[in-house]
Image (cartoon, rainbow, N blue to C red):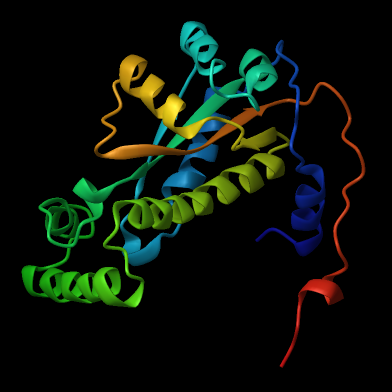
Length: 219
């Protein structure tokens, strides 16, 4: 097992890298490990409401700059650039066809268990969290997507790789671009965030955070 000090050092190593060393590429097996951290991330009901696009094509990266004001330098220099799409109602509606199939084929639930769990989820969606509105459902799915984001960045830091999460983009315009040039079905997916990976070009500033006593209460 990894010792606590090594984890602490990785967390201090991680920072929002604004510019990467474009001459360095992350080895394929190493980046596969980062993607595996995303794949094995937890999600509500285990529904995995995400899809990742790794954008290595320079022409597509150039197109993303048009509406991603927080990404140009990362798009130019990152070894790997990832878009995370959050699922919408065609995948997450309790009355749709996708979830029963997912429960059988991915989660391997028998029909009676899948039916029971789907009933719990339907109550959660329609009553507990009131996810009947399309925007609310997308926002809920997007919150789930931040779990693999954190895991990818932490695993990257443990491997000595830098990262930068990006929300600096115009969502509607970027979604339209994804539909036109990335073959993304906007009825089924929307962009939750972007994240860049690579090796730092410059040393980061010292990390600043509130003291633990200022953000944790014990009762």
